[in-house]
Image (cartoon, rainbow over all chains, first blue to last red; front, side, top):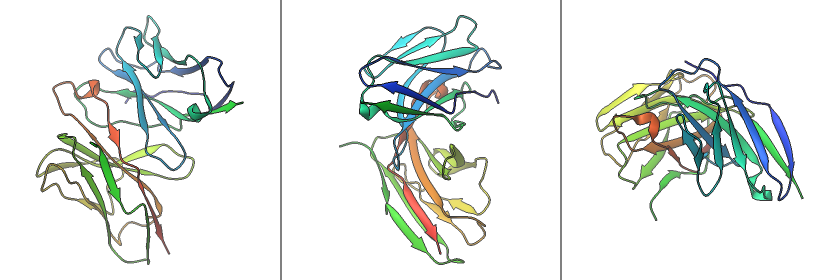
Length: 110
Length: 116
């Protein structure tokens, strides 16, 4: 299975943009890139996903490199409620399971 | 409201006892999943089910069993054979389609199991 590499932790100031990187150099052509986040003692929450093109939704934007070997989750204005562990996951086409790594712990400072 | 419910939120059991964790969804999703999370770690897949009366082992199925008699329900039994059962257990569901990787998974609030 293709793996992802994320920094263990990042810090941001409130109301500033946050760019969370993810490397996935062994991604295959049909792997989808998914992002989830998890607040303490809660279940993960879907954030965004994409295949090749950049994606935007109400929560975040996903920028995918042209060679697809890396991606960046962008939170446009971080709030204190965005403090969580963010997981970058590759999902194999037509495969139901997901493989979670350790993720990036985002701290947002007021 | 539509969603996934897990009960109870906290569960304590004595070593050697089997325990069943509940997971119910009213999202009309075909696929359901069980994950285990240990402190500071990511989630690991225990079992998943794509359709009623069918399920597959995940990465860490040993010591666990599941059933899928109804579309809405996917209970997980932690048996006495599971050597280190204390963990946070998460249930999820998703629509199942020809391109499953294009679907998001919806997670329940989790059950924290402590074996004394």
